Image (cartoon, rainbow, N blue to C red):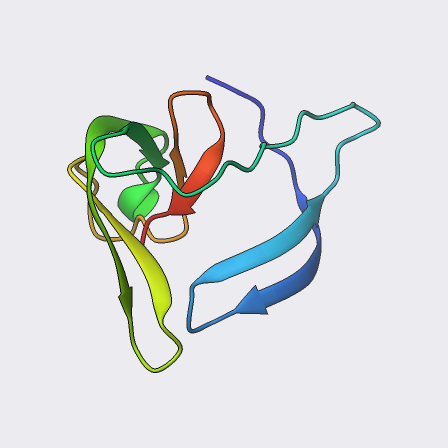
Length: 105
């Protein structure tokens, strides 16, 4: 399936956004990083890799249905057709180039 690494340090987090930046104990291994991409356009193919309710590595595909700005800070949100379940927040949404373009909420 893959390797599991121990959490070494939490560098930053947002309880409101349910996101964290952290460091893992890589045991001296060189680990690949996730590349960041631009916001995906409506109709673009995307995929989600999430871990809903302790179910590891749930994969689904879809397209960007719409991009919206909302709230007082005009936060940008991307709505997608890829299926993901409760407990998936913070999981990466990838574009067709394998870049992270958003995160599930």
